[in-house]
Image 1 (cartoon, rainbow, N blue to C red):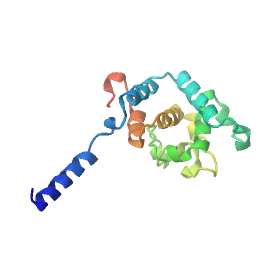
Image 2 (cartoon, one colour; image 1 turned 135 degrees about the horizontal axis):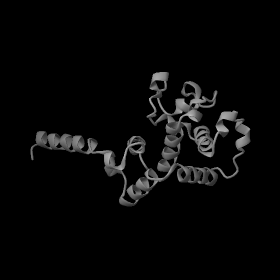
Image 3 (cartoon, helix red, strand yellow; image 1 turned 45 degrees about the horizontal axis):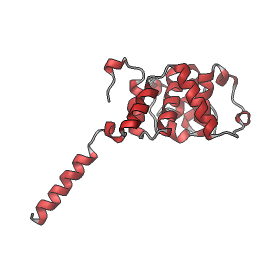
Image 4 (spheres, rainbow, N blue to C red; image 1 turned 30 degrees about the vertical axis):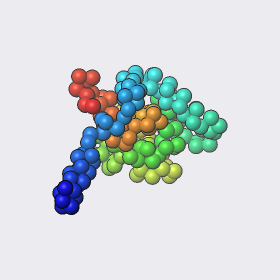
Length: 168
């Protein structure tokens, strides 16, 4: 093979590899776990995300965050805000699908933190929006099982679609 042909072949191979779909980034077992989480009812999703928070942060003094009253609306909201204070970088990488971009939200972190600035002032939007706290819990569980940011983003869309309309 001529040097020019080798370069062309290498470039072509790199283009093909870089354009592969995120669906191939999960192993078979990971895909099964990802799909299991995707199909969880909200109550179970909340229980599992809460249990993972407890496992990862067993000695956390949650009272030290001085959460506003709206965080305690229900267990799901509370878990969503706990995730927002512990892994804001994860939420910053996640798109929100509740149409809050009309409010200036750039990502899921904005739903929990004013102007998307973790550590400043919490935003009440996440407490009033089921989409936001569900997405936070999904992202948290999926990241723990090894999902990529792309997998998490696609999964966030799929959660709210009927099963026969979901994409892989």
